[in-house]
Length: 243
Image 1: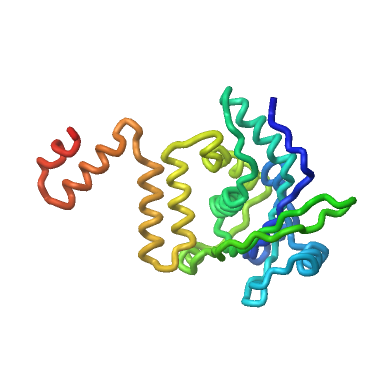
Image 2: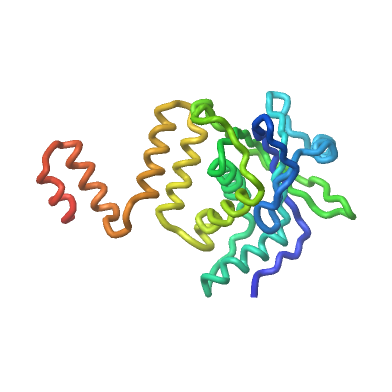
């Protein structure tokens, strides 16, 4: 049976997302229990009055919020994992992974600039959840080089939901799935937030290599091929491959 989450808890992650001209967005259920919505005045006032973020003053002005219902999300995740595995430890709400999963789902459907900072934990007090704690995290944002690759677009809700579901197992590596494509997604994220063009290029190259590597060829082939290129000795390929 799926593990039940007893405490009525919620998480909120403020985000600054760049919506292109001519596009409108109100809300979308990215995954069961996970909703991306505009940062309403009510939410903003609730945060500022209960547990304000000091770094908002330094230029972080969230336009959207990722809302996670711990109970609904955890039970739906356990059901999804249970369809493909018999024994699985559900590690709870991995908030950082959910943030990356949502932002990459947006960017695989278009190019959407972003900035994220802290997150809030809520408890259900009466009919309106109120923030009870704030968890700081390093500020991360899309670099300007990546923003200029092509004109920005905003994916439809249908595309956002389907892309997030396709990525789901790769972001639940401890509980569900682990393979080179999960590594590729991590490298892609590092490329998106890289501070320099060199780092962005390296991250993108590593992402492509991890995504396209053949399991049959594996790491030995890749290392042997790199050694041959670096040394200029064709014979070293066989020596490295036989190790």
